[in-house]
Image 1: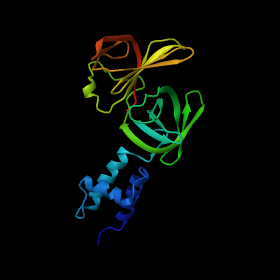
Image 2: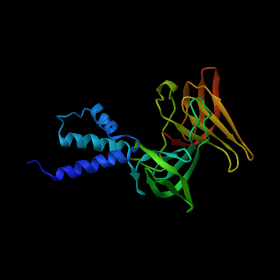
Image 3: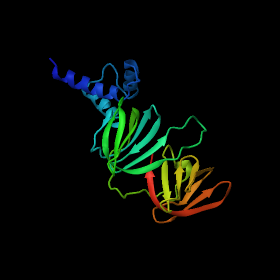
Image 4: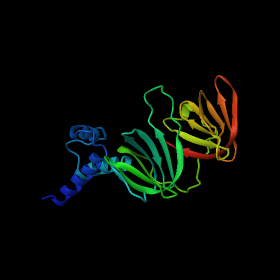
Length: 239
């Protein structure tokens, strides 16, 4: 007789995978397993491996000591929030394809208070203020671990055609009241922040000539000459 204790382990892992995507029906979840090679003749261990991989990609809960970088999507209201062990980047969700990109806000956090699918997201700021967001409907692992608080990618030479689905936010040099942030996705969104308003400009781009912390941001544009902006002070991976 096969070990009956395995049944609880399989069902527990199935529950974790399903809880992370509660909008799926059970047949839809079975369909995902099938798309990953699980069939009627698969072993319980093979099923467990695939379910565990699903949980690793989309967990249902983040603890205060979560070591990686995560994209947390919420509803009521809808936000896309990137969390790593030190930083929080908050963006209201776009209203639809082709709509303007909302300006992201990045701040140092003091820990994740609560982050679980179906529950409100609450994050503590570095100064002790509790920030409350909408109900979590999805958690996606962007990187399982993040090495250091001051680690930042060097985006110099990145071509738009090689961007895939990555999104970056670059904060440029400025003072406490004014400055510029640049959102890099398939368009280049430049947010000039003054004391009274934020000016948003959308640009086409083909390559980031220079885009590393401590250097001037230089961008090649297909419809004009190179764009030169201020020195990059921080690069945040959003997706």
